Image (cartoon, rainbow, N blue to C red):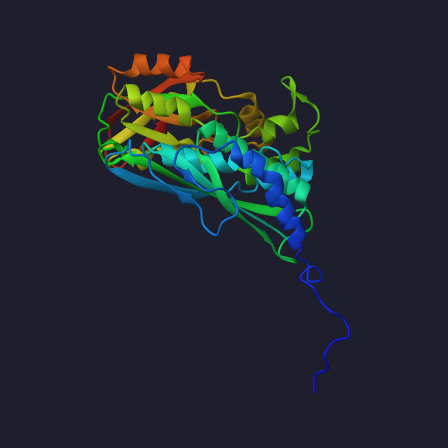
Length: 347
């Protein structure tokens, strides 16, 4: 017969600190509050988050996206830098739904760890809130999961979920793209949140001093630069003219992402001399001995977002985006596809 233990066990004895979770919720409330916008019904802390779609939408279609930060988190752990990965988390999802014409409305995050460190988690969520501010969407909920023995000490994982809305008649799906249309490239802020398994492998081989000066900044700062959020300039562009297609350059780099918005009979021909590949990518290619084709398949190579417009609108779109603070390059054009050639060609 089993005997009752002589000790009284608690959830904390099992490795879960409820008080730490409560402390985190209180710590992040002021940052979440700054992201509130029209439509939010209630604040953080409920079982579910409520959001009312604005009546400015006549036929609203909801667009949702989810993503993480990938192995860029490994660098964050090694460098003990946790204040920017939350921006990355938001950027990866809001940029994704933006390309279909959607205005991001709200965001939820999932933070999972073995043991909750309130200070670290607060830094991460502050970054999430900052990303939401930049993109104009509300941080209205999330989940913090403390799961003992699931993660190594000092490590965590992140996932994000963005929901936006677009008028049914204004959904951007690439179907209006035709030969002769112009491809504009918006500069990235760095490697964004893709290709970091290769980045880390190159660092392992090259063994650089991550604190050493790299074109005026520590290399660690360049590597951890958060993903650029393109929401507000591109929403404004869509208000002023027809945008035929947009491409968020994520996993798959330049060559694998562009075909996602092209009909089977079209090719995007990009001129690699139309923009300068930033020093970070030049360094990665040199120290990793990475072939050009592999660079284009893995990294954004300095172009974080592509915008496709008609030849007639190209100059105006270029000028408007530049005035909004974007570094824009005219990087190519759409043409008819010949046979079964790849739908993105970098020449």
